[in-house]
Length: 320
Image 1 (spheres, helix red, strand yellow):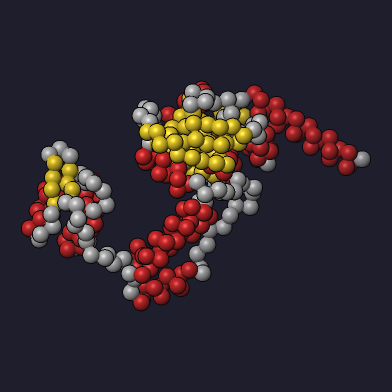
Image 2 (cartoon, rainbow, N blue to C red; image 1 turned 90 degrees about the vertical axis):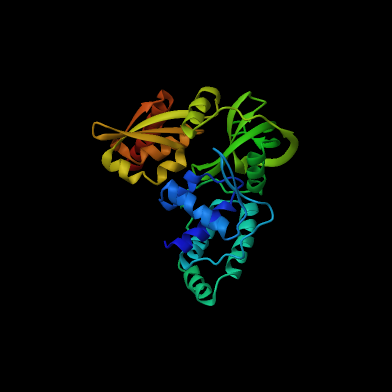
């Protein structure tokens, strides 16, 4: 990237948030801090109203905006591909907003770039998995994003996973995560007095209470899963040993069953899962036959034993 393009990109980055640290700019463009200082000084000399706070970062004075930005062909293609993922992996609220944003992006493209996108449109597709997965029903993802960002307490009407019972919950949302082929809201549940995992397609009604909460300390996804294991009876931990050959085949499907982590051990791969339904996991594991060994829990071993006995009895009857 030449210096002029970098200066323009730095200006766009400065407009993307209230405060931008010099180290962020240096990391993005792989340049030294001294080069960052020199580039920012050049922008200031060109009339851009950039301010700075010692030890904090740079900011642009309110009211200053860069004229409409032209996208490169690669950037436009990336946005079109992102749209395909949004269409398959989010709900209607996010899809509608993204379509509006994509129209705005297309409006500033030149004719050659528009033709490029049109030619790609019908040749890129994200297919839904063949196995049954929860649908992304509802229109709550956009509201959930706002609540996470503004730290707003929410009132949910939520259908629990095990009892299929509709409950009212007041929750403090801390994050949205996509795993096991569904979006999940991670939140502190005041009813259960602990962190809980709410599958978004099970939220039947959502209302903002107007109350702002003080964030609770939780730093990583792994830390959340650890706390969830201890506090949430709805989720169960499973540790499975796969032969290396079998481990290769489960790389994609494992995420539908609450995959958390993996490690290599003596020619096998140990995988940890957090799942709400051991019966479904058992049926998945049976398909890998002798290439799987269950370390825990004992309940999962017993479920698989029953499945195998039922299969044996079924086929013995057929053979008679």
